[in-house]
Length: 67
Image (cartoon, rainbow, N blue to C red; front, side, top):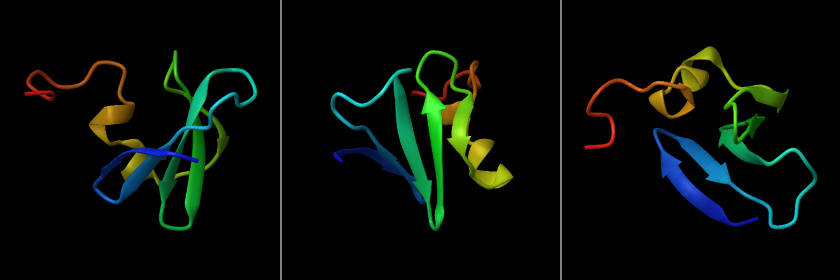
């Protein structure tokens, strides 16, 4: 499974040709969560609240987040 990003201890991975709906895997230590790419909602697994509150998983990140 290719790693496409790593930040604040969270590793984002994506399977090629994986099952629907389109999603990515977020790994944070021993926790794994699958997130819907369109809605950014967790669809399977779990991540600690601290990791889920990261701006990457917010639908409307704070201004200047990508600068």
